[in-house]
Length: 85
Image (cartoon, rainbow, N blue to C red; front, side, top):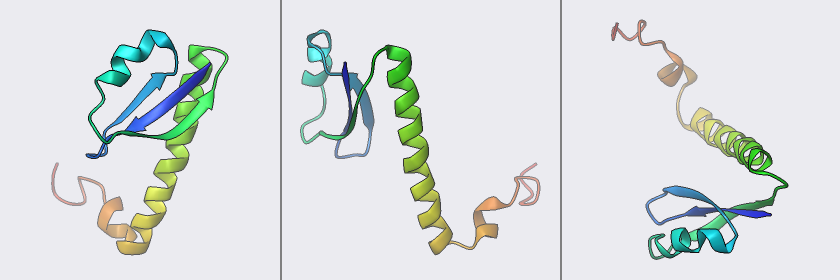
């Protein structure tokens, strides 16, 4: 069964099964939403596992970009180090 990860123009993501049972969900997606990733899964568990694996890879790319822009200490300090605790 195919699953689709949709993203709207504000960056909100919606993970929806590509099956008639989810037609009403897709109809409610904001205008301009598009599929940014999809997978074939044999079960709901498999679909969630693949989605989490994809999200980890996506998040890793974001962290690598942050490392290029910020000094690592600017976002790796603990809350205690920053005096928040």
